[in-house]
Amino acid sequence: MSARVADVMTRDAVAVRASASFKEIAARLREQRVTAFPVLDRDNKVIGVVSEADLLPKEALEAGYEGHPGPLSVSRHRRERRKAAAVTARGLMSRPPVTVGPYDLVSHAAHLMFDHKVRCLPVLGKDGRLAGMISRADVLSVYGRPDEEIRREIIDKVISTEFLASPDRFTVTVADGVVTLGGVPETALAGHQIAGEVRHMEGVVAVREEFGYFPAAQK
Image 1 (tube, rainbow, N blue to C red):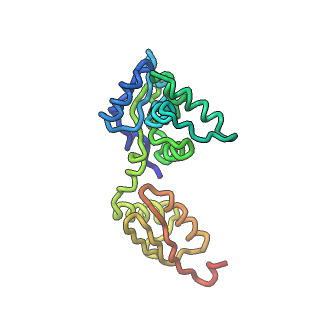
Image 2: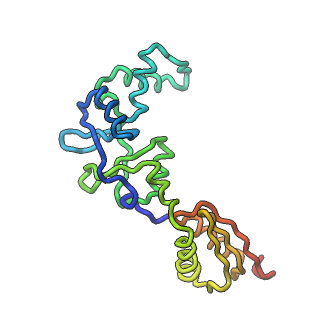
Image 3: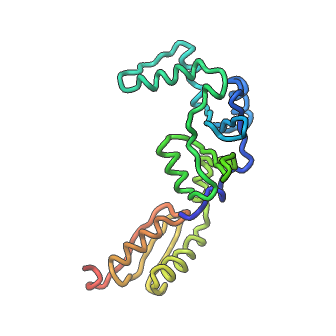
């Protein structure tokens, strides 16, 4: 996918100061209908992220629910106990923050969210200051691309330009982001390479290969 973070991010991102109180953060999360805020220091640099998940330990643990930490989750349990005792963003926030730049690929942001199990990421400009926020919903917005636009790019850019093949040899249909490729590529390898390139296109949900091959092309 070629979409950049700047194409889908929320630019007017709301942030909180490190001194923001627990009560203020909880109220603003509800008011703004977001799941997390970047936390700024006095120089407006992002030093962490405070999310709904960072606030939950106070309600859960201080209400008497200790859970069952077990030997593999002792360190996590201690961290949650510290968060339950925190009263400001500085003590509540997760750090260091996982961030992206505005010119990073949306697919890179998706990988970071998946790997770190977070719902959103601060977007930092060249000066290290907050430029916006990108959420899971923003990442998934690339799948709103029109089917006909995807089909045209496959024919014009992938088949004709990248693989220098005649579009007349292929049939391309796109329905709800699912691409079906038919026709007769010159070789089986060429067919698989075209399908592989299409799988990485912005807005493609899945690719179905229905190529036919001349007997010599199957080797």
